[in-house]
Each structure stands twice: as C-alpha cells, then as structure tokens.
Image (cartoon, rainbow, N blue to C red; front, side, top):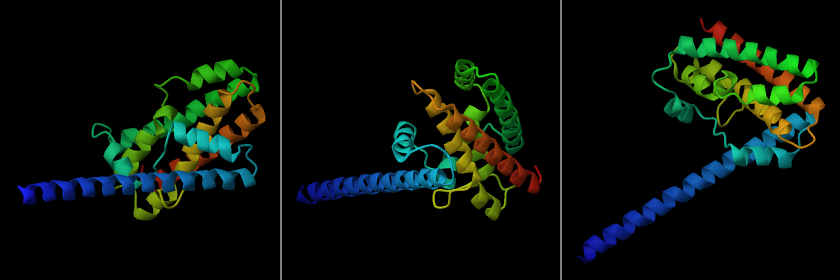
Length: 198
C-alpha cells in the first residue's frame, strides 16, 4: 500500500513538472513574439509593445512546425491549402479597396467573415508546413517558433489590422501599413511555395 501511495505521488509530481515546463515554454514563445513586434515597430509600423501583448494574450500563436502539423486537418490537401493562400491574397486586394474609399466599417465587417481564406491562413499554412513538398529551408523561411519568417509576418500583420480596427479611434495610417506588409509577406510565402512546385 505504501509503495502504491509513493508511486501515485511520483506520478502527480511528474504531471505538475510537465505542466510547469509547458507553461514556461508558452511564456517564452509569447515573449519572443513581443520582441518580434518591437522589431517591426523599429522598422516603421505604428504598433506598440502593449498592443502586441494584448493581441498575443487574446490569440496566442505558437508558430512551430510540430503544432502546425498537429492542428492541420487531414482532409485538407497541400494543393488545396496553396490555392487557399492564392484566394487569401485576392481577399487582401479587396480589403485594400475599402481603405481607398475610407469605408472603415465596411473593412471591419469584411475581415470579420470567418469563411475568408485569410482568416484560415494558419490552418492552411500548417498543411503546407506538414507536407513533404516543401523542403526544410523553405519551411524555415516561412516560419517556426525559433525563427520568425514571412509566414509569421502574415499572421502578425493581419492581426495588427484587425486589432487596430477594433479600437474606438483606429489609426488608419497604421492599418494601411500593416495591410500592405501583410500582402507583401503573403506574396513571399506564395513565391516560396511556387519555388517548391506548387
């Protein structure tokens, strides 16, 4: 009986330690994302560390190939995932037209549609990262938890656009810059995929 009790205590301790390490790992990942926002800020995008942290806490992004592989739906094929990125890029073009006419509420409503391909970018990018058609270097360029690439920029910049639009007095200069950077980053992801035969 004593042996059974000790064994249960050991298992409980191991579970607690595993939970602690997982929490620490997530915290480190989130802090890295804040630094990523800070670096972008120095490059000209109007977004501060507080806004970055608010967005990360609201929608944590752990950009690792392991998590993307785990989350990718088996039903989505790599070719279909790539076509979704093409469609997402066209949706961003549509979004930019709302800015040109200063229809900010229209832009907010448009981007809130969950069926948009750009709102499902992470899932489709996960399918591509899990596929064997992308080589290791290309996957690294798109982005991982240790090295943020152009794929992570798509997520961060699109998140910045949506977050800014939720503000009572949105800074539309910032919205415009973030949307443009999102488009540029997605162009790079698409180019990487095409270089791998998509």
